[in-house]
Length: 79
Image (cartoon, rainbow, N blue to C red; front, side, top):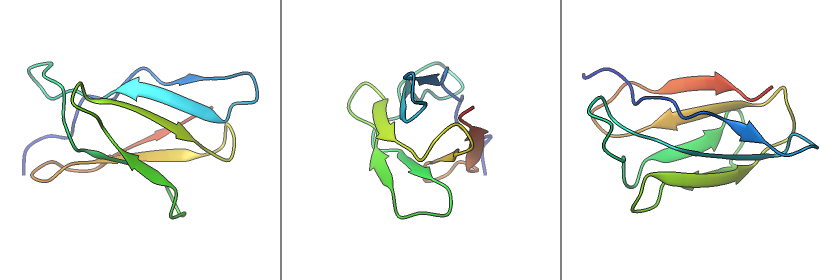
């Protein structure tokens, strides 16, 4: 398996519930159709044609998991 995707700079709104970013590969190309999910929940989304995503999470303690076929999953704590 290849290394995981490059994690985006995670930005949160004041209530620390909206997470947005761009997922890119090792060449900085956008990862289209990657899964972005809140760990331990069924809450998730898929990256768009530019690798961007937007996801509402429970709060700053939430862990976001980035996954894509052929790559190792990567996890990032929101807060």
